Amino acid sequence: MNARTVERLAGALVLVLLGGFMLGLIATGTYWNYLNPKFMRLTGAAGVVLLFCGLALPFDRGASPGWSNIAVLSVFLVLAGISAAGFGENTAEADLFFSGGKEEAQPARVEWNGQEYVRMNTAEVLLLIDRTPNATGERVAVRGFFTRSGDLATAGRAAIVRTAVVCCLADALAMGMLVSGDAASAPPSGAWSEILGTIEPMPQGWAGNYTVRIPGSIFTVLDDRYVLHIDHAAAADPPAMPYIFEFREKEPYAY
Amino acid sequence: MFEDLNMFATMTTAVFLEAAPFLLLGSLLGVLFETYMPAGRLERLTPKSTLGRVLVGVFAGLLIPTCECGVVSIVRKMLKKGVPPTTAIPYMMCAPVINPVVLASTYVAFQGDYAMLSWRILMVLAPAVGLGLALNRIPSQHLLKGGLLLQEEPSCGCGGACCAGHEPEGRVGPITILARTGAEFVELGKYLALGAMASAAFKVFTPPAAMEWFAQSPWLAVAGMMGLAIVLSICSEADAFVAASFSFMPRAAQAAFIGVGPMVDLKLIAMFSAVFHRRITAALVIVPTATVFVLAMVMQGVGG
Image (spheres, chains in turn brown, blue):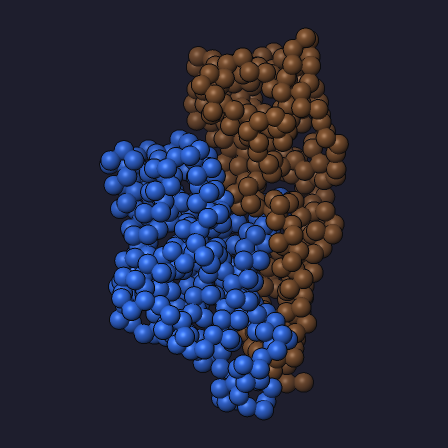
């Protein structure tokens, strides 16, 4: 076996491992930790093609994948392996992003104390505020986790947020609202809750750019005109996929 | 520390996985193009006038949409087959933006803001046309990195038509196509992986408050958002949503973010350096960056 053959075999192995990793993410249900599930078929198809490319590579004696290329992709595969193996070992707020499972569809509205609240995710609340001339008084039910990190801690405030992913984790943004009311002070940072709340104008002295670090997010978007006054809050399990992958502009919202 | 390493690994993996199918598709199309398109055929099909050739390149993305991750591979094969740089380079720069999917996502992200959409198109169009015209007199192959052509020739020097396992062009079977696609993917995948690692490192290890420092003046905001677009390496389909979220930044800075990102980012710079001659790589980085900055400042000036 000459050096060229070994190089082709090493290149083939890298391709097979890459293809296998892509298919493995789908098979194990952990795909959503990296990408929006709407791309799952695309990734699956690419994984299959990469497998075939890897199987074909040793047979093309003219091919020369290059040792440096193989080495860098091998480093990538090690990182991918670390990432996939580490899902169960994160702590604190990062923990919130690495749990999975499936859940049943929820009713579009929930009633509490004689009032109806429309279920939507935090990104949809921000969209609602954007397209509504005056969002004051809108009643919404949102799921998310409390955060008091960064500037929020300094100001003694809290926000309810969730991370939204359009394509992949690289574009992840934490989106949410500052919360007000007596119940806002109780839940610890990182606690998942379902909040039934009323959108209210931002109280005097609350405005400002709050820098909040949420693991995995480029940036945290908090509405700068309104707060969510908590009418009722209850501890909740994180959704099966804690990220927001879908945004709707009318009921039933993606929630 | 372990959490940061894990997040770095996850982010790197996410960026790579997002781009990999498009890089693979680009590699496959490039190999098919190289194998089955007779040399000079496409050159004969393109218009004779320089401007016509540039316009074909600019708007080809509407018919052959591709993202920035796959387009470099396709353009490399185009140039090797003699497609004039006046067409290939504008195609490479415009296709990731001037295509139906990205135009629609920009429109949605900025809630039907046609001005923002128009500025984005202009920021991509201007450097693409400029570079297309500037490269008019340079032969296609001269744009490519010197060693690349030799590297892809079979080691026996037969030109791919001897008995040592290379099938003559025209009788290439599916196994060879797959093998060549795989080899192409491994070669460009290295640069994708390096770009993904650099992007992930920035994202994980930079304090979030750093960006707010740039919001102090329009100059800084535009420069900061352009720098962010370059290091984050976000897909052109999603970058408008990220740009729109930086609501505390001037609109011109948001436009600069979505203008420069699809033409210049870390993974693209790495791929450019693998494929193109050093001076061309420099031009592909500097010209779009400078043009977008100037246009963004004009946008800021006119209140666009």
